[in-house]
Image 1: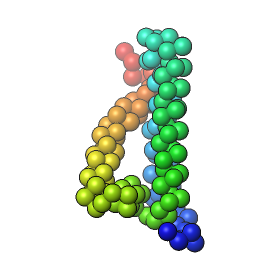
Image 2: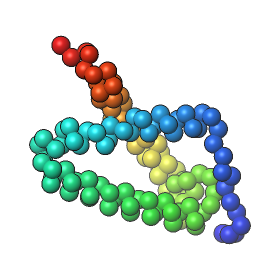
Image 3: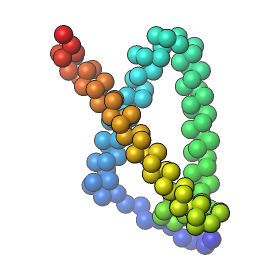
Image 4: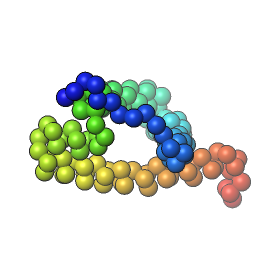
Length: 126
């Protein structure tokens, strides 16, 4: 692959809005362990679980780093799996990735209730 090929670095206003909204919703992933898991697993169990999750995320980040450097093209996982295997594998990989993204939306949406509860100081609690 030509080393001079570069992706354009630009974000539209809708891209920035989507990124900010995703970060706000994802905030619950950092608050929920203290409120939920710490009670049942204790501080050590929660720390171990978060360390294991961090190691998994580091492995994923390393793979994305490799993929972006090896194939600096738009298309992400589809391009990587298509080039490394074949178009059929790229198609299947992309569909499963899309389904996983759709599955995570309702899980992250539960964080909205948590954010609302914390911001509104439990005014809806009876």
